[in-house]
Length: 419
Image (cartoon, rainbow, N blue to C red):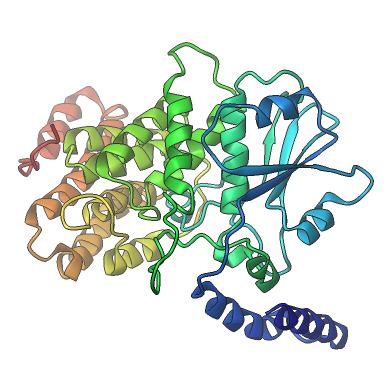
């Protein structure tokens, strides 16, 4: 196996010398990696290094967390990226000249991270609100190089960076052979007898720790960059079907995230999706209305067509949630409709509504789910009513009564709310 890794590395080096594209060089490695992922290969615990560790490193390493992590001290005279790559470390932590803690991960050529820094918001789009991957290249925690205000939260975030650096798309064959096994989001089936490890990828436990640390924050307490970064990660994870969280965990986690970052539209859209997934239609529509206001008042929304992502959601769904696996898909669709409508002129909203509802009505996703169709219809009605109210503010007083009466329509019956 190690000989195969060496052969792949040699072929890559030769290919780069003669100018072969990286994609063709990596085909053999991709096939070998896929085969290796099917093996019952040993898995290393998380391995994280400190560069010039100080008191902050002691606080992080000694924070009370029930997790299996190996801590290392790295030489400050050697490039930590190459050192971590050779030593099969998942991440390293260092301080910057500005007094921030910076958590970094190894990036191989052609295997870049999906998110640059959890401390920075991503430009608003459907893939950013509901990402397929949440792994980041780095995490910057300003002002944390001195005494940490919340060492357990800092440690949980550092472990999260290291954990998600093991996304399959990030790992080389040498990483896999060395024990950096990829996240699979499922428990492997043993061929005979295998050691049982609770939550082998650590995602469920990691999210639980982050939610617990965020949940103990009292109202009125100043929220800093670590809390905001944790809120973004928790919200992005719980609004997807990546780790199979149940409805109660999703709802509680998103409600907590919305309390930490209430001014970020992507958090409110995720909250709306999860509320609708658990049949809290009223709460979901309230969150969508708030998100719509935030988006149209300057939510940094990318001027791109979101309809392609919505059609993909209609065709394939995402699983998760209640209602036979489609509850979360319905919520994400509703949030996507709100996102796409924010950049449309008012007179185009009706065309978008008719096209979208026709696609959903004739998809396999909504067969036999008329109540869910009525929820999507009500989402459009809420958006159109919001536009009508805006127009009323600029109409003469004599025309406002007529316009208001014309905008009133019977609302469809909502689904039963969650208890």
